[in-house]
Length: 96
Image (cartoon, rainbow, N blue to C red; front, side, top):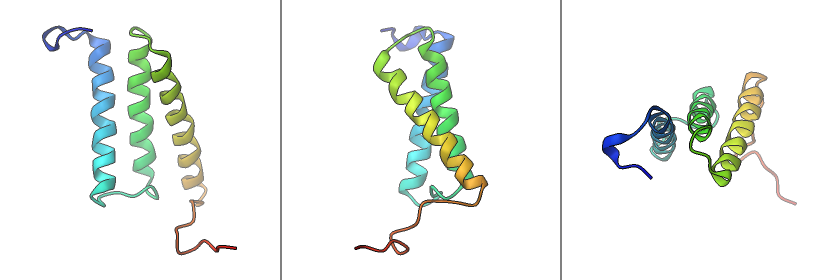
């Protein structure tokens, strides 16, 4: 683990990914964006890509598993959004 004064380039890329994750989550929490917006999936994909790139140098198998999950879900969500499909809201679901 390095101190903050000597972060290498890959650590900075990973840190950028973490900042994007936190920004995206905060914007969701404060109702600035929703998961029905394409930018939500784009930001998730960018964050996961940054962290995954940093893992090529500073490997952690658990972090890689999480990033691969976020990448796949972001791609599926973005594709569904592009096709005009999204998960139904609580009001649209019918319970049995």
